[in-house]
Image (cartoon, rainbow, N blue to C red; front, side):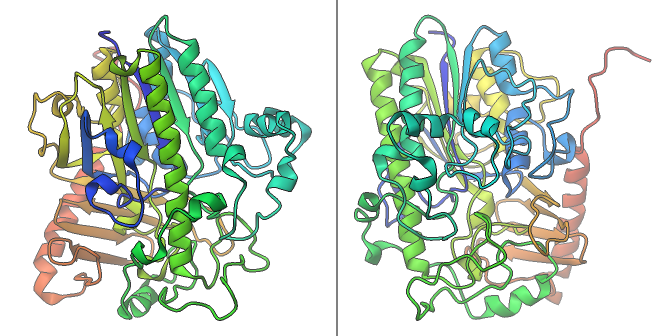
Length: 495
């Protein structure tokens, strides 16, 4: 097949250091690892926003957030006038489908207003759990809940635990990840007559941390590393009290609460986006890893289905995540206007057996590069608005595996709303060694040298010995951000 099927698996809030084949301990991901045997594992992939909607808008439009301007979670609707990648593939003759969340617009207690996204089959499940004020119309549209009801499971009873940050979740046979895998296998089996494009947008390992008990039992707590933390982190965060972060008060993750797990969401701030004020960091990491191992099993089932149906060598498989999770690093849980590696550095593997080279790439790459990459692989014209740089030459051995970009960018602008949020504006410039973070609305910043300080403990922002470096990087960051702000509609005339 000259045009590959596209199997695009996107997890939600999965850190980069969660792939066992890349040397990260504590969990096993043999099926995700296997994508690197016929393809490329990208070790340095960065998201353009540490928050869902602006990140997803980026990798579906090929535009940086400063250009597409979809900076916030919870927007009323996705703006008209921007092409979306699945629409391009549908117009090119592909059969298109989505399973899970789209998350380009608000979906809280309502059905998300769909843009002209191009998905022909649409199995929607924004959240796995029921929402308190969901209307009958919203409940009817929730495909995962309908799937549960067909199996005699009441979604409200199954998810009665919601409100806890760490808990035992539904059994694996009723899990949203299992539902997604089943829907995907049905799609793959049904569409062998022409190329297809399938997006699987899982909710996990997004909090609450609620894996099935049998998957928790597979994880050895002693093998799970503790979060990156030093006492100095607590003092460091005092400079960023006015910067939006779902963790309001950082805590020492080495201290285990005396009252059990200590993971109840604070009263008055109940939300799946509200972290607890205290927690057992190792238990949370075990649960997070267990959620990823369930995802890995789903990936394995999909790869077997491709092989059984004779489509394995005709399918490009992309596995990645929209952004990361702090997971206790530096005393923080969840996400916000920060640019630590745990938040902006994400996993990504791409495989098309027989066409892609096998290996590990240390090149700097960005999620904004995905539309150009997939269009090149399928010989589909790129979107006029595309600002990305295709990875397809790296994937096929036509360009060096470890060379792509000399910098990556990420940004945050009023991206999440929670009690006390202020609408922060921040941006990151990273050249592979030095990371410059600027929090524009509060006049603060950070400068880290990841070559000597990979865990980002030593902030050089106010170090007089690095003042010249800070100034030089600030100038570069400003120039690079200006170059990706976007120039509006396509030009069709000379005057």
